[in-house]
Length: 404
Image (cartoon, rainbow, N blue to C red; front, side, top):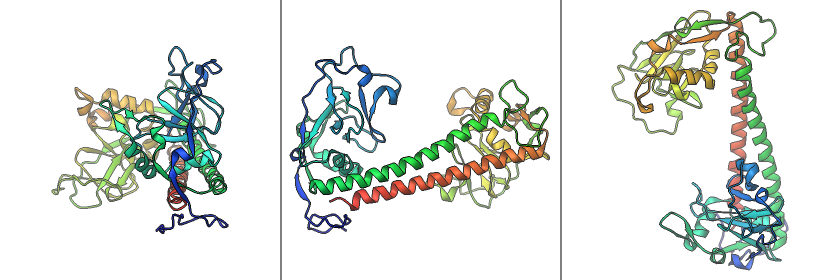
């Protein structure tokens, strides 16, 4: 817990002074500089992102949303602070970010500030990165309009109270969090590279449309793949079983134990019609197969009668097929053959599923190698996701403990 001496719970050695509680206007001043000389063009328009900070609009969003003239846009130099009044999910009163990149311009909907001599502008962004701190600061200053727009002037947004240390401690904190952000960015990059690798290999280890062999094959495998009906690859498991671990099919995570999901249990108390699932089966949500709601089951358990359970036939590696079923072209095929008037009641039952055709390796060992390859990638993806999540949680904790 923080004590009542207005000092943070954690701080760097050598700093002992009490943090000062003052209005933000003592640390920032409104910038009135406009792009009157048209030094900047539409190519230089900046946007403010909750995750990425201040970014070039074209690079970030693919296009400029500026009007015909940008001469009245506010100029943002490196080190300037920008407040955007646009509400975000976690920040209903907007966000405050510091420009760490090249100069540019922002629309009149943004407020631009210059740091005063006693202020390290990077510290200002870090101070407001904790959502609860940002929201509690802006809440008393902002009035929401009828269209959910923010009614607060650039000057009034500076009238709230903040607790800041002296500039040398601000700079030390900024440097520390900059290093921490670089570490997070490195792990984020590794995570995204693995996702991209998996996405790419999904189209290289399976034949592309109109072809009978994959672009990339593991050593020792050759020959054309054969087109087979899915009914020749899987039979439907209809065995009812009232007892067992309740399983759920998710779009992004495949089959999970329901007890491990943060969901309300709306399942029927009477589970006599629930279907048995064995390890190695594929289960899919009949009404969401067109969205990719299917997965290989590493568990034995039961699923709702609304699900279809597939039992792999001899010579079929279900893990390999579980990845094939996640390809966008295959999901599109599932959508085309799902029945129903609207997307709310589209469904793909086994009698229709079994008539669909896909290319299958004639060699069970090749199927198995593909399934194991993607399984290993998924393990690496999950490990990197967990590391990334842990780092973000540590940062969130530090944002609380290293500030007043």
